[in-house]
Image 1: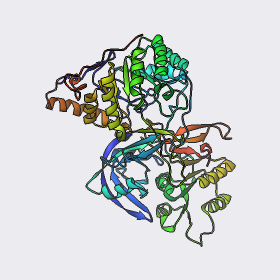
Image 2 (image 1 turned 180 degrees about the vertical axis):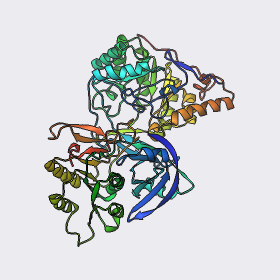
Image 3 (image 1 turned 120 degrees about the vertical axis):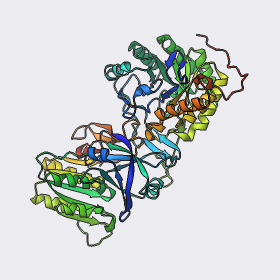
Image 4 (image 1 turned 90 degrees about the horizontal axis):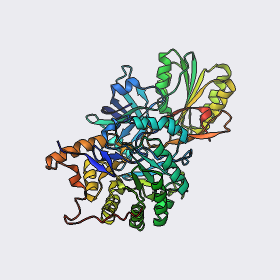
Length: 264
Length: 315
């Protein structure tokens, strides 16, 4: 983990409500694992005052650049879009947190994402492909143009199922597709991000099959590197959920086993 | 090279910069960004004599120029603090001022006694002002009589320098500071974060899990400077100044108001190199302005003929 000034390569519209920032960050990109995040500061700003944490969307094959997909939600992301242009540098801390674990012997995995949560998954699809693991993607969003990165998942040769809330033809939910495929496919691990309903259903499937399942979680953060103790979520301390405790998303996570996630 | 060293309550600091309790490092592990020995003294997160998970989520919320938070001092079991944290802290090559809190007078006395026995600390900070606890902290920090009793009890338990951390409460600030001075405290630290609240205009409910929280960051700096200035005139004790400090110019401002040492807090969450940068820039500023001793800055905003009050210590 380190703090760097990362030169901006590009900052362009991605799809729907999403933008894509790409920066030159060889030391961070080389160390990054799928599911880890970076924390970006809007330079010299008192409002917004805090950094903005983002999961890393992708790293280039040379591992010299990293990409962050973001949605314009407020002042911080609006300023990101306006001020982080080529020629400027981005104050960035990373890599942060604990990433996804891809079992050594995995052959087939499922990636399940909704909305901006999908942006935590392409890097895992890239890693899976590099290791010869087949990944199938199950992506949902409020509208069709917000199905971020569908083409990335498709490029690795796995199947891609989508559901957009605004598309009447999309009768089946992504979890319907997942359960149907699971009838004939032996998944070795499941990965999910972006919705409690998806986490719940993925966890049920993982428990029934006795396979690992992980979820990347979000919480409001102040620092992102373990000092402020602010970004807790409630977790199950045992698989039955009999005992619970708090865990800090920034360093215990952001990736948790789905059975750990309480109140999903 | 200007002299940046300062001795405060008998604690020798090689420079006047320190950190607000709970804003830097955790469980005896420090500095992912700069060597902890860069600062003049370290104040680790408040420890209490019993384990406590802290407050429920959501704990932090950004506000303009600051942070609204209610973390609630999550604490590891004492045994873990004693066997894991304390040896790490003792091994550091700088003075460590351990912050402590309790729910009752007895618990404060107990944690002061235990910390003294660890023989690891240069001083103890009594947190009399945590805004986020249902018991302890502020219950004592607003009430001069309760603060007097509590500091007197702590005084009986230790020969270490005792620093009382005070709440930014306009009406009780001076009487509480005078009471803890009388009870034998060696220094004061202020301000702790004031109590604050944010309400969601859609749900009409408080926006953080505990309902009530703290406000910290640059948003509170002018209030904090005023309170340091006020206590410099009201008591004889040296002052650790803090509240929204972010730059070397903030350090100068707090010192001119009367602080002998200055703590970086919330800013480190955003700009983790703020303290070492400020130290460098403070030194450069002193060279530029021909100031060879940093103690010359303490109280410089007050009239040249102003003299601080005599000690009220009775114990």
